[in-house]
Length: 189
Image (cartoon, rainbow, N blue to C red; front, side, top):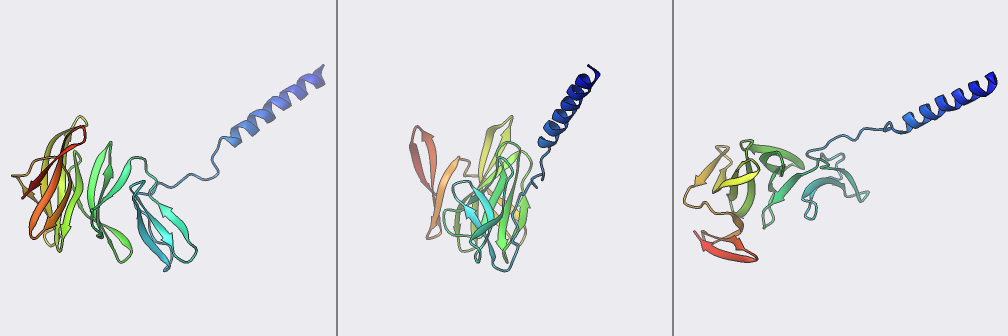
């Protein structure tokens, strides 16, 4: 009887050890806000579907590193550009970023209760929609431009609409604003 109890105890201990060690991850995944290039054959790319950047090796045709933080996304201008915005849709912390020399450079951070999204770009003019939030509700929108030399935002206080998309044509900004159920208004400034 003593042998049976010893065997049962030994089996219980072994099951617990094996069960516990299987729950320990072999490698904790590193949280990556902005991917970095790993080799001279690597480039930074933007995935339009996931709204996340990743480093891609052009020689091995493989993704090396990608943004893997939940709800942290990058947003691009409608036209090709090396400027983006990035932030978390729940906790905000938005910033304007730039891909320069194959590295992601943080240019400007907005207040913790604000989000900033690209609207339109033409030559050296970068226009954004800056939104202020309170209790996860947008309480204010304003059109801003980014002055890279001064590293600051310039507000256009006469445009306080929730701009969806925009384009600069002959020094005029044309933009759409969502009204309701698939209805948009077109504006020109």
